[in-house]
Length: 235
Image (cartoon, rainbow, N blue to C red; front, side):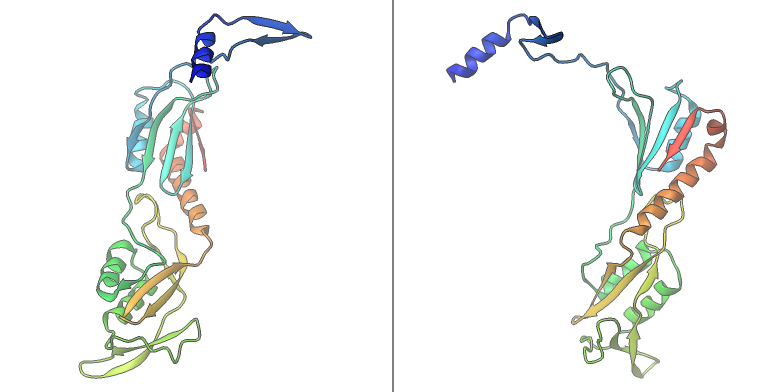
């Protein structure tokens, strides 16, 4: 405690510099007084970001738009003398929740398929399978690790064994709604309950496709500013 107090008292003194072998040294730690930087406005859509850029409301320098991820885009200017930047606006996507790698009961899974995924052929096939399951048990005797059999309704009064589709190509909402949602493959599995789950199977490649789609959207909607050398877009 006494040591810390003495160090504090010594630190209150005026800093002195000394030169040794042509190199300047200080006897106290010095801190750079940084230039103030702007805090970013937060919006929830790409269209909001584009509207702000087109307004030229608060900026008169060349700006860079960085597509950070499928759900985040940041706009900033050049480095100042302290190597810091002004961040003018940041867009963060609002996306519905879906827990991949986790099992849902069939009713919840059915709702999620219709509300969180863009309609396509594989989604519709899954809806038919999940919505018509008859028994509460998923048969495992035909499970080879890829395909599974379940008993489902095939008509008004009859049932039949159907193969669970696998893998499936789906388009969940995972990026800004203004751009096309990337399609990727998923492993579709079922288990006793019955319960259903989706496991991502593209190694995250969808993220690169989503970021490319965002970049193309921004270039298309800010072409005039880009041609005037006011904006640079990177992803």
